[in-house]
Image 1 (cartoon, one colour):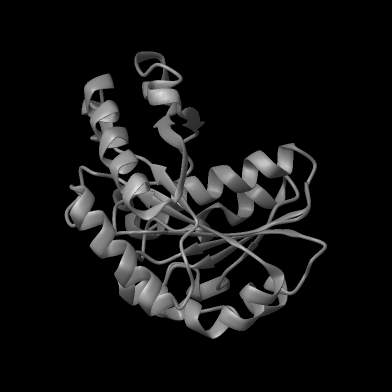
Image 2 (cartoon, one colour):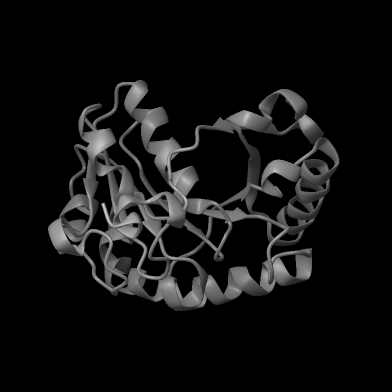
Length: 229
């Protein structure tokens, strides 16, 4: 398998940052030289940049604002991201901010991404506003593509209600995303389950692949910067 460029997008609260982080970990363990670029300028808390120190120990480079700007709620983009996209010796994952406003930042990389070739994974949680039905998901898809100037290639189902997640909720989400796949001809192979819920959610629902995610990101009230430490 060659070094891919995978762009991960999703509406606010979809879980796309956790997916991006786990994806980076997965391919690093497979032996790839992985970099994870944080292009999330929307959400100030649940961002890939928060795992920089953890991942450096595993040889995964996280490209994101550093130092005093690490947790800044500012639309800051590292100039190194363009270089990462053009580094064909790396397996590059880009975590993009939720909703169309966040995807607008991708427009500056269209030429480079298109030249290299890319996958764009749209993470969907049908238990979140604006992506609860197939119709809403397609509307969101069209908005994200319009603002990013890039095309979604894969659908990823991440339907959950945190500790209230059960098999019925996950199955319903998969069913809705499958309907979107049929209407759009987008690839839909994987559904996501957090590791603490994995035992109660079976594998192979509707013939899809269950991917178990480890929980890396802290909640806002768990972050040291907010505790005054």
